Image (cartoon, rainbow, N blue to C red; front, side):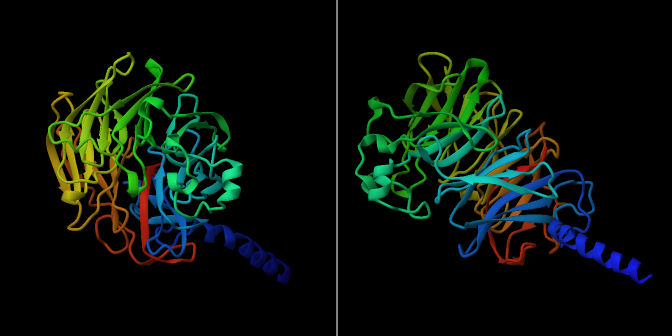
Length: 426
């Protein structure tokens, strides 16, 4: 009897770390359905970055509740981009941009997320920004800068955690305002890399920001905008041949009649008609056509109110745009490609700094983050474009949305989260 009791106690102790690792602090037993992965860190920049796993199964009794967290060893600087959608492999890339560090997370088992590896420079480039999957499953990433040579690094032993590389830092020529594209596998190993410097645009901001791929015409389109506030005024895009990463064209965006809405091109998205729509910091939408030929062209087709517009999402023939000036989102209809029209808007909060959006094909929900405050799931009427809150998605405080504000997190930290990328499970 004593021996039996001893084995029961030992078995319970063996199970304890496993149960604690699942961090069922809010949701009890988590759903086996859909999940939302939110990437963020300490809003006070004192603690570390971490990944949040939230129950996103609308049929679950724990819908909107936190499942677990996965902490990293990276002190929070600026947790930034993840991939936009969950790759088939379940290996998700996410970065803290200013240190230039990328993490690869294994999310095949959402209840037990793991960190596979992390990296800084790749293929001779540093400070990756955006990640997009190629048909072969590899990641194509935009890198903002050339990495310093060994001689430069020894002469200027700056940490990756310090300010980003600038021309003044190394006294480099004009091509220091350029970066490149790097193809990597799921372990972060470099497959190929190519720089984007164009001598015809010497001195221009050619720092790769966003990328969209068009495999059927063997093309990729990259936008150029610096993440440094001192020189973020990019006004160009570039066309690449996808099969060999050969730079084919560098071109200016259309300034339009107001001469500012083309400034800061960021996120390119493939439209329903096959053209590419580009969101800018000047809150413009540029439509780029002729990508397969020798004369691609851009036209400013829409302007949202204000500046600093963020990550857009295209669902069907609707483009959903985060617009800080209205503290929410605006939806435009792309049925007439050169004449989009607004069909709806949704204010997320009185002071909500709307930024990231992403679509979950399985959940049929749109996620919106504003870096602080709350994470919202929204419903999009795909016939009319009308946006509305998913009022069933709420946290322990009973309010709509998942709260990022002062709270205890399962990995032992208490504080408010600065969040950015958010991705649904497959």
